[in-house]
Length: 267
Ligand SMILES: Nc1nc2c(ncn2[C@@H]2O[C@H](COP(=O)(O)OP(=O)(O)OP(=O)(O)O)[C@@H](O)[C@H]2O)c(=O)[nH]1
Ligand SMILES: [Mg+2]
Image 1 (cartoon, rainbow, N blue to C red):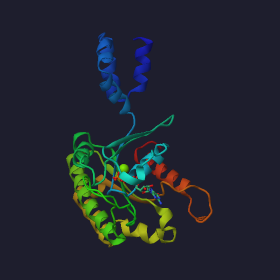
Image 2 (image 1 turned 90 degrees about the horizontal axis):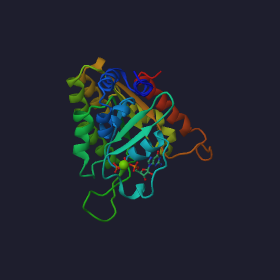
Image 3 (image 1 turned 60 degrees about the vertical axis):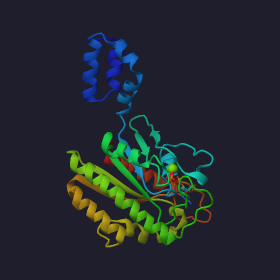
């Protein structure tokens, strides 16, 4: 086998490795060159895929940008995402592919949900919530400034979670492999003194409206098939001490990444 083949093989996961070996041995290298998008999809499979879900304005794009060490573009604050965003966290040994499903003000939401939970089912899910601090955004096709109270945003989070939880449940029952869910409680910089209560609100077994729905999801999916973690994070805060000396955003992001790595079997 040629050196190029060996190098290629070491880049690919097990089953694809055999497939590529056979293909190259058959001398169909030109076939690979003719299908670059298929080949790059093979390469990307090295990284576990992670759906990032949650209602509009909750902070999904910012969190995915932070996790992939990318600077968020201008204008994020005003408009929100119109399409599914793909972000990659690369490291020497491992990485992740994040698929950020746009929030409920985007027309592309339903097809994005289909993609991540049905067409190409992801390995894990980060569901983002913000303790009612989602930035109000107007529905697509309307103009003017959007407003919403915290109570309304909390209710909207719950409604959004119900929809996503159903999608996760139907994905879980369709397949053998266990899946993992991390509920990322973001914008922690806005309520640093209430973190414990807020984490409890989103946790299974807490008896809260949100916790009850997490329990329902676990019952539907089968407890052994679905692991659930609830972790606080802040995507925009910096480690400057200052007004929030007790909050360590970098450490929270690092803990989240460490957990994702454990869940994906990286560690
Ligand atoms: N204070 C604070 N603000 C945040 C944080 N994360 C995001 N934001 C702000 O919240 C707003 C919404 O964040 P996005 O990341 O655009 O929200 P999204 O979930 O992607 O929203 P859609 O694309 O509409 O679905 C932006 O103005 C962000 O700057 C955070 O950790 N702390
Ligand atoms: Mg977004």
